[in-house]
Length: 77
Image (tube, rainbow, N blue to C red; front, side, top):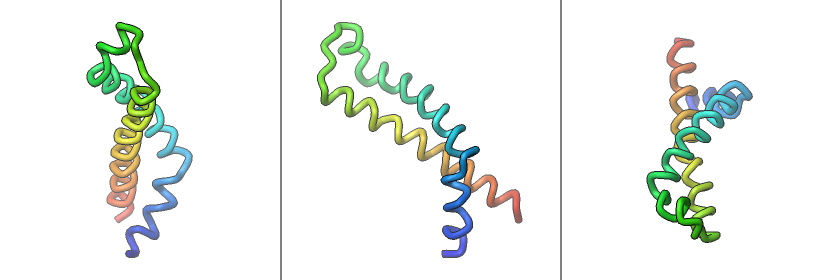
């Protein structure tokens, strides 16, 4: 529980959030083309596809933020 209390401010810090945002945009675009490339190139993207592509960006954002947070916490020991 103590780790969560220490980690949350780091997770939501400006530095971690900005880096995670950059990672999520790059990786999210790559994943969007892998998963929906045929629809993107054909121009037949539905609203459902747009929502899926946006939600897909949350995965690399979360992974990047958690990794950065754990790394910072480990380096403080």
